[in-house]
Image (tube, rainbow, N blue to C red; front, side, top):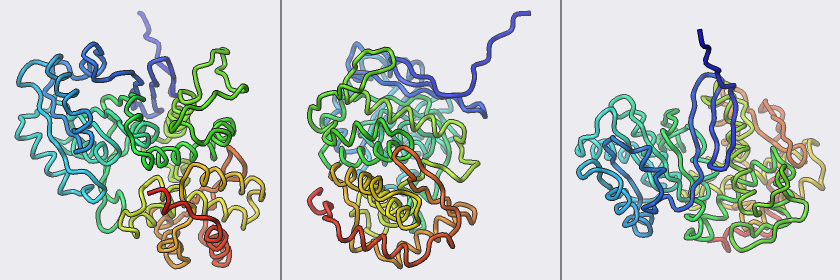
Amino acid sequence: MVQTAVAEPGVRGDEGGFTLLAPEGTSYRVDITDGVFAPENPLLAGYCEGRQVVAFLGPTVDRLYGQQLRCYLNTWLRPGSWSVVRLPGGEEHKTMASVEEICAQAKAAGLDRRGVMLAVGGGVTCDLVGFAAAIYCRGVRYIKVNTTLVGQVDVGVGVKTGVNALGTKNMLGAYHPAYASINDPAFLETLPGRQIRCGLGEIAKMAIIKDARLFRAMEEHPGVLRRPCPEPSWLSDSDGVRRGLENYVLRTAMALMLEELCPNLREHDLARLVDFGHTFGPVIETASDYRIAHGESVAIDMALSTQLARELGLIGSGDCERITRLIVDLGLPVHDPQTCTPELMNRALRASWERRGRRLHLVVPDGIGSAVFVDDLEDIPAAALTSALESLAALQNPLAASH
């Protein structure tokens, strides 16, 4: 009898992207391609072949890429097998009402259990369409074409979907791996500066907690992905081939996120390093009525968590200053006077403690490229939180200038 080799769980990278196989059996692919909507590129068409497709995209993406998408689908798919729906944009539309509308549009288009919902856009669009796909007919395939930097390095490589509800960010959702997730770096060329900065915040998150080499690259070149940057002389891949700083930053951020998610894909263990920046951040974002963007709330959270680590004696002043300086140099805020109050930040700590099974699991760096957990509310004295907030308030705050 011939035995078929069983792949070992883990993340495997190749020139075209990454493949993840989780220990519990879930497998999915994150592709990296150039010109995803170019008529000669068969990648997206291969995932859609023989299926009914309903594509969803926001107004900005429709304006920039809608015609290319329609021409591509018309070139590769049979007539009558696809349609395109324009969704309203913005975090305020990340609601159950929007999910219901997506499902209604899919039903009107005749989407069956073998069909595909195609999300083209950033985190809001992909979260909405992913959640709709998870519940439509009890689950259908969906494809993500990630057009933002946050989407490519964060939302696009994970399996979570969701909407804001009950006054809480991402309160309702599902784990629903995409049938395909496609990243085209060319999309980043049309992003406004604020969206690039927000994405750099998510990349900095992974560097701070997991990769001192990536941190050093961003520290030396905080303008990466915003303007041409020379590749550091010390940076090369293991085979000695130089592939460019931008490529290194993007691929390393994706790989780090996938590797961290893989063994705990559905969050059975609620102590997760990738929650760095996501304890205070969701409350800051919601309390600001989304005046503060997601990447900006992550940046403020990272700065506050790092200052708390210094107050608690978990990180030295030098490394604390380097982390805070990187966040500022990336053009991101480290404090917001309207939301960063001791009362609201204490509320954020308690909300995380309740959500994470009565354990805080606050991620704080204990060095560059390393982090630990603070697990109990009692481990964070009120005086330490107040002192950390005051230290950040005293720094120059780039939030207003970043808008």
